[in-house]
Image (tube, rainbow, N blue to C red; front, side, top):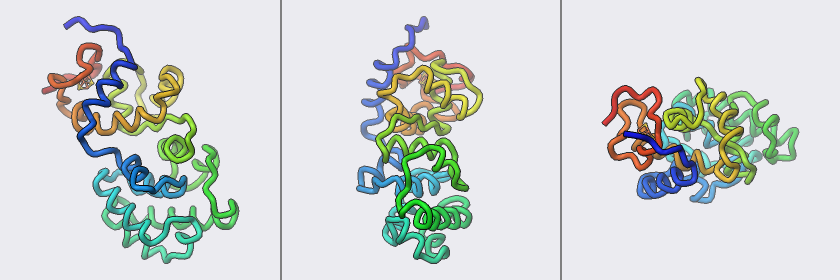
Length: 221
Ligand code: SF4
């Protein structure tokens, strides 16, 4: 099939329609439920690392039932945080890291998580992905949150050519219109889970097949 040039506006419009009825990515789901502060979004993102969205949402709700602010979190025993997020992968170190961040926010930042990339990534357990998701979702700043789905899908499109999520983030910052910097994660996480899956993507049912280069795809449905 001859391909049309990749049109990001058209592609994201079609994908928006394609994922309308599937569950949202965890952080966006939690945001819709009212867990909108930078600290809540950061804690949820840490819980989400190597953990399925469905589990992340359950764990985050359980944790926020105990504490929603750095001061309240710092007052908890780490074992209580660990119990709340016990369904997530690496829950013990995550519990310790969440509590340590809460303590530091109380001690050094007036009990608030600053909307600042360098401050966020200086915390143990917080990488560029979570920092940018917090900045984009909770702080309203343009920031590209690149997880494995965003990395895989945008490279298959041929929209970027990068061999790590960090390099994809830099490539998207250079090419993707700023109005999509937050939405790209909101749209491509469910799209990557349900259509452009890690193995055997569903290309035959894909709404952007006519413009996707299918780079690196050797087997598909
Ligand atoms: S055509 Fe295939 S590889 Fe390209 S985005 Fe769709 S599912 Fe993914």
